[in-house]
Image (cartoon, rainbow, N blue to C red; front, side, top):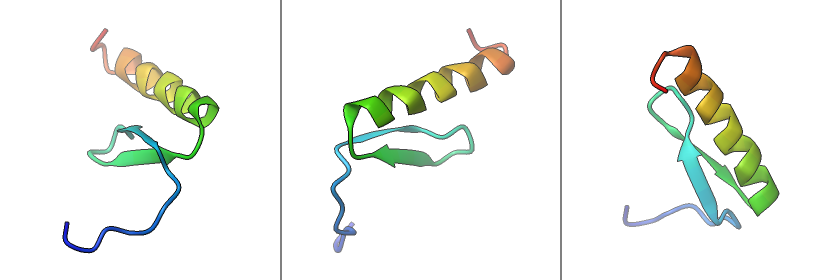
Length: 46
């Protein structure tokens, strides 16, 4: 990407729809990871 958006986000994880969700703090990131694992369990991937 030649002109990335200005952001404070340090973390990212898949969002379950083919995209990503970004987080500014480790606590937010960990919550997003828990959501991703829940999606994977629902899909039978784990």
